[in-house]
Length: 187
Image (cartoon, rainbow, N blue to C red):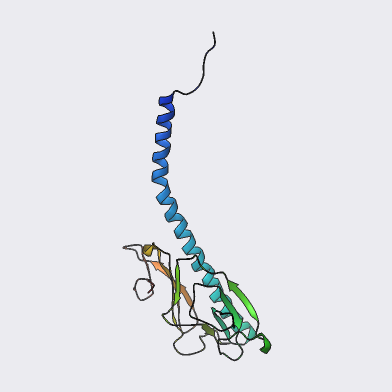
């Protein structure tokens, strides 16, 4: 006499129901984790790019600009696109290789739909050879806002001294704030 070994249809359906319940609970948490990870990665990559710009200005004893460049090499207010760091000898926010201006580093564009802005109208961030910002009114906040997840906005505050500070979560509501206490948001 042969003995059949296996699962009954009831056992299979119960196992499937448990599995689907666990997936339904886990997927939203996984999505939140993925968004947090993407935002943190973008913020820390941008922070490193700011540090590269500042350190290059000091070590090269020259002005260095961080900005999104258009096809003509001019800085434009399109921070969601690729960002570049270059030695800006004449401080005109135009990358001019003919003047021996060197491209130092770049960062790829952010995810389509997300927003990155520097202040409201800033086209570039330029450091002087001292490590301070080269020009009046350049201090502002980089705000990164993932599409559909305003509770996960992050930012980097750039002070006139040239130092950059990554935003921190508010202890009461866990939303990121500027050093002044204002929430990070994009317009």
